[in-house]
Amino acid sequence: MTPTQPVFQLHSEEVTRLCSHVELNENKFSHQPGSVFGNIALIAGTTVGAGILALPAVTLPSGVFPSTVLLIAVWLYTVISGLLLAEVCVNAMRLQGRLSIGLLSMVEGTLGFVGARIAGAAYLFLNYALLVAYMTEGGNILVSGVSQLWGLEKIPPAWLGTMTFTVIFGGIMYLGREKFIEKLNSTFVVIVITSFVGLLFLGGGQVKTVQLFTHNWTALGSAVSVMLVALFFHNVVPVVVTQLEGDIPKIRQSILIGSLIPLIMFLIWNAVILGSFNPEMVQSTDNFDPLQILRSGGNGSGLGVLLSIFSEFAIATSFIGFVYGLLDFFQDIFPVTEGKPSSRLPLYSLILLPPMSLGAINPSLFFSALDFAGTFSISVLGGIIPALMSWKQRQEQQLNSLNKPLVPGGKLTLIIIIVIASILMIKQILAMTGHL
Image 1: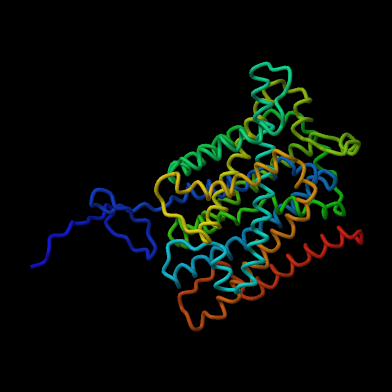
Image 2 (image 1 turned 135 degrees about the vertical axis):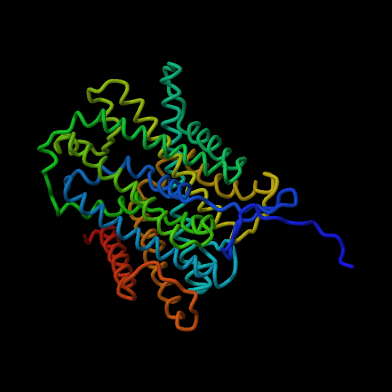
């Protein structure tokens, strides 16, 4: 006789994916796939961060039209490289039969040990540097807002804001479940978009039509690195592929729409800010702060409140995305079983404590390096590495019919991606050495 066994039932009628999120609850299996909307929000939220606040500083010298053309070109580059990374991730999941594969495992399995170490170094440096920037800027906005709300004469020290921001948003991610964080991030994105619309409505009244037609194409070069940082979302691509269970149409839709939303926001924001100022007003200052200049405009305190809300939640959504990316990275090296929050404490400490400490000690430590470090890291992670991995996988396609290209154009597309990334790095080296 067959021993008595519990009967498991699936809530959904049919599960056709190889790598599906299936949870056992009271002797019943339930299918828990990630939503397209949630992953669109994750990509959009990750992309819309501090980059949008720094963008006008580098695009003002060139003007609205040249910077618009360059923004669209950089977006196309990041979308293609992001889809290439998703293609590699999906193919690796299919080949290995695993639900989740981290970036390091993908690179090492495709390009070997040396390629994995190069990608790992670039990934860690970029993510930690940006987390320092998010923690410090988010903390500054937080303590400034609290000081104004409570009528404090003296603003608390910057290190206190950095630590408070990290404890609040890092603690939410540490204690919250994945579905809760997804919903919270989606809510934050809605707040960002809503405040952004209100901000444009108030700031649009200051736009001078003549400023929209000023242009200087020769001044575009200095804006590329900031645009790359602003439009970078590749750190969450493995997370998106995992949550959507390798479903190619959903992944493509999430990446396209999730990156298109920030592009539209950047283009509108760039036009409004650049259309509001004369170049002479900014050239006389070393540090161009669009928030400070807008606050001193003539739209009243409502603009200042909206700016603070928009900035804080834009940084928070990016913070969530980059913490997710590092979680995925380190879990690939140090597997952690899901369970009590205490089991995740070492992992979250490794992610949050180093950037929080650096930000509290010296908030400007990474700022001077972000321009060229972002170019190097993103050129490697968002250009050369995905193209080389896709090239290697497509060479094996004759032996393995599972490989499914997400980007058309064959080797020509891959060569263009590698060449562009190499040119950006060479340009940055020449600029650093004083030859450009």
